[in-house]
Length: 292
Image 1 (cartoon, rainbow, N blue to C red):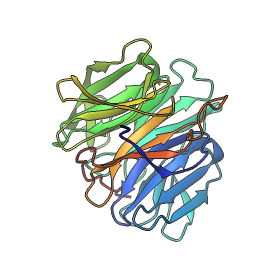
Image 2: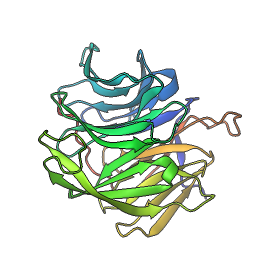
Image 3: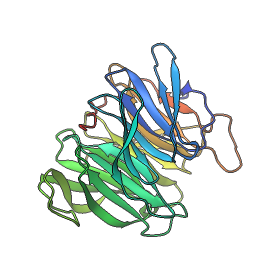
């Protein structure tokens, strides 16, 4: 018996970054390589699509209304009326924004990667609501999943080619930042949390549930896995497509797990690029909106 259903039948090239927008009771997700931000209301089935002017790695709701987006050349803002402005502009040839997440303090943690996945060509930065940007990690290859424990004291992070989910301690100040001087919460004490075995795929996007367990999508692995806080595998969701990209809890009770997917170069299944859902998968955490 399958565990998943189809939430949104779509042909996204690189569906990514599902995020539950509690203020509007909808799912937000992106198709990176077609420059599209999608929304889906599971109660009504209503869908919207917004086209950005650059490849968009992630889109998250803002407390003031609108979206914060991780684009090719930096982090930008759309207001509630759709007007765009740059918040943190840093154009680097051959590089684009990838996954991003909003921390408990309302800052955006935004990752980048080289288009050709050059080793060390990416970064992870903390972008404050006022636009102050601090480089937290350099020498990253494919910056991906980011999430925080229920008490906010741990941060989980994926640089995909390492095959690891790493964990950091979270503290106030600039600990762990390469460029200090900014107030806020930062991460330090990086260490391995889980290593994905050879042949099982590569860790991509992640989310953390109310029990402190980490759910991770395995690119080229056709699975989403759940790991307990001590790193033990305790659930596997087998999927019909090989390239799930990320997962997030949504629905009004935050009990449904939404999973974005990508198409392969030679499509093998008609649901590649669709958004799947595992109803009643668990209980998610309330996700903060970007404070800027």
